[in-house]
Image 1 (cartoon, rainbow, N blue to C red):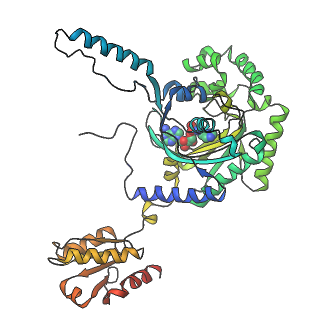
Image 2 (cartoon, rainbow, N blue to C red; image 1 turned 180 degrees about the vertical axis):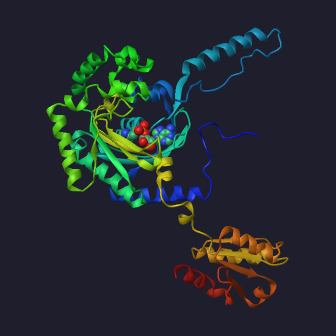
Image 3 (cartoon, rainbow, N blue to C red; image 1 turned 135 degrees about the vertical axis):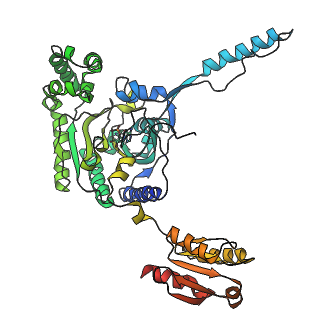
Length: 454
Ligand code: HAM
C-alpha cells in the first residue's frame, strides 16, 4: 500500500473546517491591520536560502529538500542500436546533455518564506510602494525528525513588514504593531495561555563584540561539547544557542548573553518596543537566551510559546531582519515579520472541529423513479438561499435516507415523492424533534432558514 511520505499528513474533514475557520479569522485580522496577501513559489533557488537563512543554520545545513534541476530530461542515446548513424546521434545527445547541465540549477522546497518574500521585494522593486505589509499562508518543507507538532510538510501563516527606512520600516512602532497583532489574533481565536518571549539580538556591529566574547568563553569548554557546537564555535558562535543536546546545556547556561553587548541605539530601540507593548497591554517576558535559528535576524527577536503543545511548544517565531535585503543583493530595506506554525496553532485551539463545521440544513430524499430530477431542482432552489443542502438518490429506501441524513448531521429531511411533486408541497421533517409538516415549495427556504437562526 502506498502511504503519505514520512512527516507529511492528509488533513481530512472535519479538521479541514477548523483550518479554514482559522484562516478566515486570520485574514480578517490582517485586513484590520492593512496587510495584503503575497504568494511566492513553493520552490526557490537553493542559493536564496543559503544566503538568506545562513549556511550554518540547522535549516540549511541539514533540513532542506534540494535537487538539481536540469531543465529537461534527455534520452542519452545509449539504447540506440549500433549503426552508421549511432555515433552522430550520440554526439548530438551528448552535446544537448552538456548544454542542459550548464542550464541546471539547484532548487529547494522552501523551508520558510521570509527569504522568498524579500526576494520578491527586490525583484519587483516593491520599495516604490513605500512600506509593504504582506502576509502569506502556505506549506513549508523541512526534513526534520517527525514528532507531534513537527512535520516535514507543515503550514505557516506569516507576515512581513518591509520597506525603505524612510517608510518607517525601522521604527520600534512596527515591531510593537506586529506583536500586538499577534496577541489580538491569538485572543480572537481563543488560544489562551500563550507567553510572548522577547529579546534583542542587536545589530551585526553589536554582535562583533559578542561573538568575540563567545569564542573566548567557548575556547576552554568547547572540547566537551557536541560536534555541531565545536564547528559552530568557529564558524558562527551564536548558533551554539540552538544546541538541543542535554549535556551541553549547563555550559551554554554560563555563556555571555547578547543583552550585555547591545549598543546604545539597539538598547533604545528595544526599550521603546517594550514601552509601546506596555501601553497596549500586551504582556511579555524577556529571554536573553532567545537568538532564533535563522541568521538574518537583527535586534528584536521573539517567540510565542504555548504550554499545552509539549516539546514543540513554539507556536510562532519572528523578528527583525534589517540586513536581509542587502544580503540578497537588494537595497537597504529594514523589515520585521513572523511565522505562525499553523499545525501547532490548530492543535492549541480549545474548539473542536465539530463546533465550527456548518452541518447541512437539509437532506433531500428523492423517493422513487424519476424523482432525482425533481430533487435536483429543489436542491438548486434552496442552495440559492444560502442553505447547506445534501441529497440522496431515488433508488434509496426512505430508511436509508434517514440514516444518511443522520450520519451527516442534517437538521431536516425533505421528502420528494410523486405526490409531493404533484401538490408542489413537501414533507419536511425536523430530525431532532421528529416533527413533520407539509410546506409549499415557495415557503420551504424561509421555513428552513428561520429555524436555523432560532
Ligand atoms: P521559524 O521559527 O523557523 O521561523 O518557524 C516559525 C514557526 O513555524 C515555528 O514557531 C513553528 O511553530 C513552525 N514550524 C517550524 N518548523 C516546523 C515543523 N517542522 N513542523 C511544524 N511546525 C513548524 C521562520 O520560519 C521565519 N521565517 C519567521 C519569520 C518571518 N521571521 C521573520 N519573518
